[in-house]
Length: 176
Image (cartoon, rainbow, N blue to C red; front, side, top):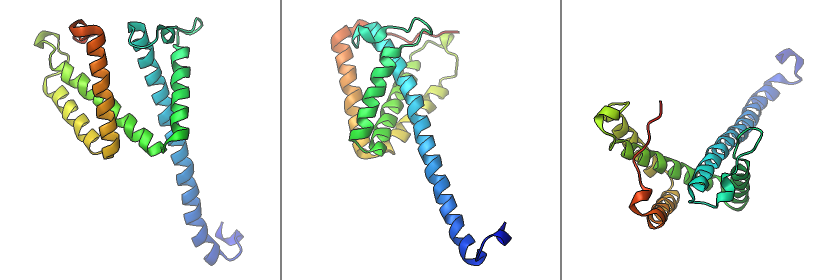
């Protein structure tokens, strides 16, 4: 195609970085949107489960009659995420989200260490590696996101303990 371009020695060296930049920007926008969409679904399900248990307003535990999807929870999460994206730097929001998700998975891995040997699906080193990996990744993120995430997770734990007492914390249920 170089034969079809006027001044190819000048135009092609300029066009290549511009084309790569456009591709990078387009890919980054799509990838960020895909991450946010997957988070919306996951967080919507978490909000549904928490409201079903009484940790959040019960109205958020309603399921759509046609597909059994927690639409109210997903709409509320979508509105909150939209407000956050508009009001704060998206990188900070993603870093904070990563810290809280990694914290959640670290707690899950730590909890799985309490499962009796007969009920375990994986050998004990697997959740240990998961726990170490989650903590390592979380502490490698922005310090402000790490601090905010730790504060939110700690506050949530304290609220759950005050609300439900010792009976609010239970062993994980293993499902086939």
